[in-house]
Image 1 (cartoon, one colour):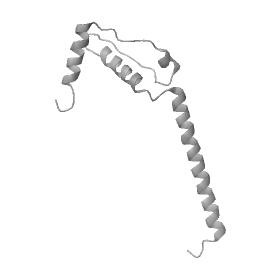
Image 2 (cartoon, rainbow, N blue to C red):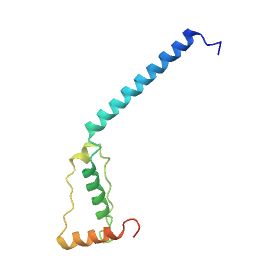
Image 3 (cartoon, rainbow, N blue to C red):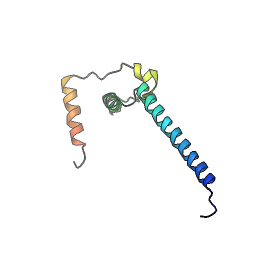
Image 4 (cartoon, rainbow, N blue to C red):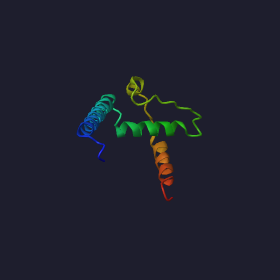
Length: 102
């Protein structure tokens, strides 16, 4: 402990402050980038999952490949599921049966 000089301790403390500043800036930049790309949209994510599950039904024999949510192609995609009332009700009943503890 006696070998640590005041200059050495202050230099290490300055390094830690610099590292903390860099990490803080990186976190703020990540938040801005995430917001710009609109990655945190629960409803949009839920729609993508529903679309993927609907296309994966055995009757459809369809393979769906989704672009990552941050890509312009994914954000401009207007693909939607169009169901008649009977199909929508069948889908809801199947989904209810697959919940946890059932």
